[in-house]
Image 1: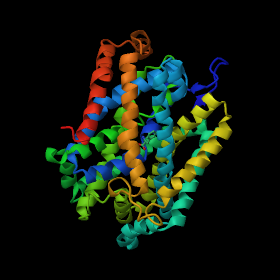
Image 2: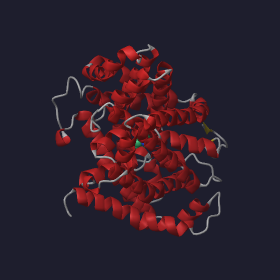
Image 3: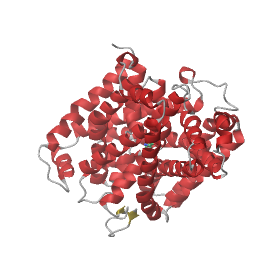
Image 4: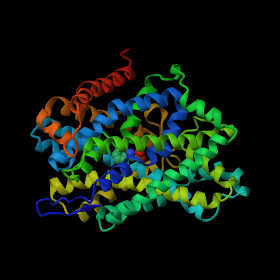
Length: 453
Ligand code: PHE
């Protein structure tokens, strides 16, 4: 993936445009698409939420991804260093916010990814067979009730993330990505097709796509906007950091649009795979964070070849989570390497260890700490997720959009935007979106939630 090219580029570059796309798509596509999108869609009533989410991707997500990548490539720095290099003292806050967000998100991301590793382990043992179908929902309840199991799998997943970020296997990961992503995509297509043909298929389709606008209340709008940031890895400098490893000749708008498109497609596909099961078996769409773990294994345990498909699915889910978690850790590590001159190994081990410890209360939030409630009655894990996704990321994104639209010089932005491809009228359209539309939309959703309208 990241190769040291010339001595002038000590930080290294992606080996190709495809490598850059795959790494960015790898960061974007993860638990957000398969675990989170379906469950929050279920909680917020479907169609209207989905359409507003797509609207946010187009009006805020794409322009902001372009902005982050442009700043990254131009400065070739970590988020804090990037703003400092552009000589805008106060904007360094946006970089800082990003480092904090990466830190906090990774802390609970490892817990959820740990659940996925546990399910991979269960699948490998051939758990998902017809005899066990009735017991599938209890498997999840059992996992949540066990402190030890959750801490163990959280540690396993953090260990894998640290191992990859330390280096050495990154190029292998990039190569593996090129196979794993298309396979994940194919499996989702198969599951979605099966789902659509099942008795609950039509209900699922109308649940996902026919909007009931009365359900789109201010909290739902904030959740959809926040999830656009989370799902696309925006607002915290992950795409900025990945952009800092991009070659000069790569067209950034091209990469950003491709990544946003793939990410949205995977989210919709996993909704199409999960909701038919929900409706066929009369389950509760608003079942919360356990939705994917309670639904898909039922399908696996009843379909022909399900044991194998289950193994493949959870393997790919773990892989998708890994390509996202390494980007989260990368932001934190890049900061300590660039700004504090730490060695890569030292930064990764120390920060990985600390982030693991910060994640411990999240791992215990459904068991030992289940009676502790924070934001709106949420447990510890859900509260941190809520805070990061709905506030820190959109706020970070707002800063980056305002900075790009109002403080970055036209020559710099236009120059970066048009490298690698000649595009008529692209700059004015993008500039209009990032300068006015994105910040205003984020501000409106915030004010709306705060009860101003
Ligand atoms: N986009 C990732 C996902 O959907 C999560 C993530 C958020 C990764 C922010 C990096 C930065 O799972």
